[in-house]
Length: 232
Image 1 (cartoon, rainbow, N blue to C red):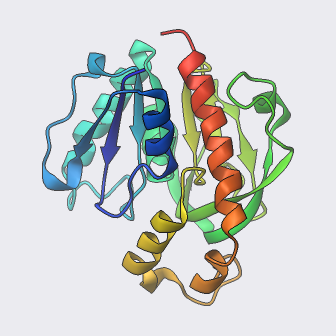
Image 2: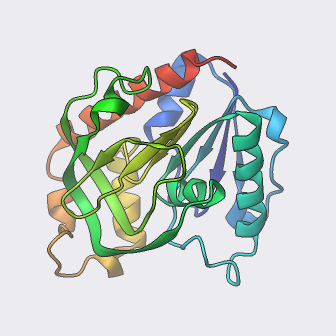
């Protein structure tokens, strides 16, 4: 499976997805939008991974490449390409599918549980997922569900934590790919967001338990296995 990722900032990378791809010997290429790299040919990837970033989907004046990226995602959805959108990537995928993206009532940063939807858990992509899982968050925005989407999960602070479209496009508001190293990079680069608020954890709490990273990375591997098995 050929993987191509869209990267919005230097400090938010593939995380555990890189190790999974290496283990499967999947070719991986990337577009560093922040560096001005050109967008890929939509036919050049079997799986398009859209990563996170601190900007919002509407920040086109500051980041003009967002317009072209949204067009690419809309084209990928129309083609039936497998797409995985994470955090900002999920919000971009929602907008490309015609849904509204907006500010959530709460900013959610750190380890908070999500409850997986029963219908999503019956899909091949989330088979074996627990009813509840503590996952890593770093977001202040949210989205409505696109028409025809299956909700994946919800949390106490954010109703829509992800969706499935046609069993091939996956949007995750939360992070399953985060490793300790990538969490440390987020903390270094976005420390100004770690304010005193109900759903924001301090940095030391986010890094206190290595097993948390292992659990979410295992769930990401299972999701990638499902995407790999999906028909091309």
